[in-house]
Length: 590
Image (cartoon, rainbow, N blue to C red):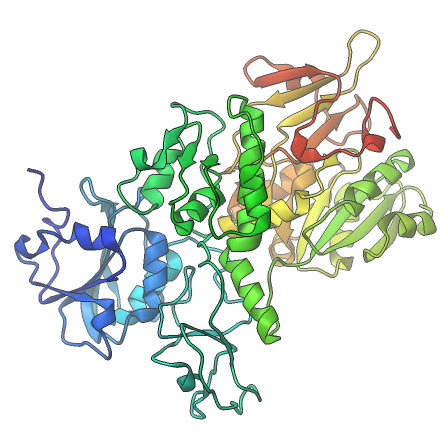
């Protein structure tokens, strides 16, 4: 019999063991914990805590995975001070490291490791007593990695029910809705999500009564935990029934296991939470009846797909994960609550597209790539390099989209052109687009989606699809290269770089160079310790015409046998590109 996962963990007693009553997997894992030598555990379900619990030598929080830890954090009460705080995630595949906050006592020991054959364990030992409640909340915040963990301006409380999935670690939990209107509450909620309604007094801080919502719809899925990071384009096994890989609810371990299969079949009785966790993670799912999900997700799930074709399989995964994110993520859930309460909420941020071109003949094409974008708020900053564009034509092409047109002499450094465009932009998020490449209508949206779930400093797509123009000796080809996607990486396609304005400014803006400006930027991000995320490559095609590129490379380099996955005659984009006939190189406008 294998030893208990906690058998070699030194935790001064007595030890408070906190577990969510609804987390069946975590409760099952506690079997035998009383027999661990030296642990002195007292197991306390969160539902039984109605006030401070102090006087502990150590605190151990037990949850099935990161999503469940993040959900339970708001229910953790005052726990006093102790020298050891630990977190055991019983069904999570990868250990994670806690970064101590500067106001905490001195950290003398930190362990992050696998817990035998049962999940992962993180243990923090302090030189003096640390406030255990704050350490647990910080664990819940950090466990999903760096990135946006804010509430976007919407303050939510919960009455008679637990907090929703996603990080709401400081949300107020109330016995009933009336407590939200208490005059002495300095930070009243905008919305109270409750099992039942009731009267709430107007609050003097917000000058109204908090909005009570008793029908918020299906619980959201935590996109910072369940997301496409690690998606596999290939598979080891055929389609499998969910019951064959899961002994209970879907956890991170289940998602990791599902990635080895061609797809996962769900029956009509599958809980909505399990369906959403798999869908937003990009696992190709086959459903038999769809439960309580948004119509857009239901349509994506019901669409016919040939899972034997790797490209069609990935396109299906993308459509499903995008619909799940747009309608069932914590971001979408909060936006819906904000709309109902009339509260300002920051969802996906606006983007300023930086488009530099020195080719008047490509301008109409490039403007159409910007104008067709959907699911994102976009401003275009057009940098005309060496010519004066027809500004009325630009306005007509973009319709109602805000835009600026900047002019530059032919001799101006490319890096200076982009820097001036970036400084003129009105948005805090910038996207560099190229004038001759194809972009799917969801390209900007998908980059923002990846920025949200990855927490990366820079996001982009791979140059996975390349269109090679034909010449007298060779017909035109579309090449799909073996570029890993949905991974943290060092390089992304230069025409898809999405970066925060503040980070760009901290790097000195775009470097004053005539070419390889993208490589300079990515090298600077890496040198600064920034994280670069490469999302899917289905919504972007790199065009190679043999001249006019700042990135010079022999076209045959794109056809090396060791990097080519597929090759087609002519122009053969992914269905996700939704190419307009006028923009096809084999007919129409180009």
